[in-house]
Length: 249
Image (cartoon, rainbow, N blue to C red; front, side, top):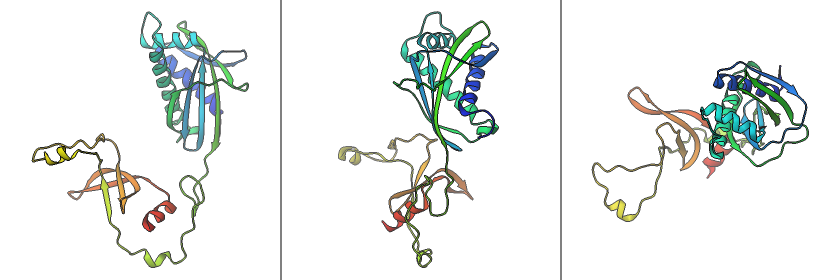
């Protein structure tokens, strides 16, 4: 990637967000020294790079930062510190994905973990005016994501080659259905259904719907209206090899 390394860029974004939340000008500078990492937040990401970015903070620094962000007089309990740190790091990763040199980087998961910083972890001093001064430890394990090629699935793993005579079956009609959700009901609940009954499908309105062929998942999408009819705009598709296996099944 161009420009700053992932760790350096993430430290900069963390400084910007900390300064914004504390309403104080923030500075971030690489530094030496030992910092015990009482709190560890691991971010898993994908996009032009895939891997993890891990951020560690000393116990006192994390407690002070959470207290200031939450506007409390006393040190918040551990669950509140955990939630605050995860949210802070999530915002930093989101901002990182909007930078030119890391555009397209997407956060897959974020969580507090029990880990220990490696010897090569980078240390940064973060200062937000006279309100906060502390140290961050950052280290990453990332690789440049492989671009899918012909014959590769979306994961970059080689799948079975398409049969040479595939063209012979390409015009076969297949039953395609859309699954908005699913649930289980007891026989008693089923027999009590009537006009006006509501069945909870366990899916939020904003969640993607499943696109099925032969009852097997091939894609996900969002519901749209096309010429007065319902339709689905595809947002995610399984690999071509997996789709062929679905048809075969």
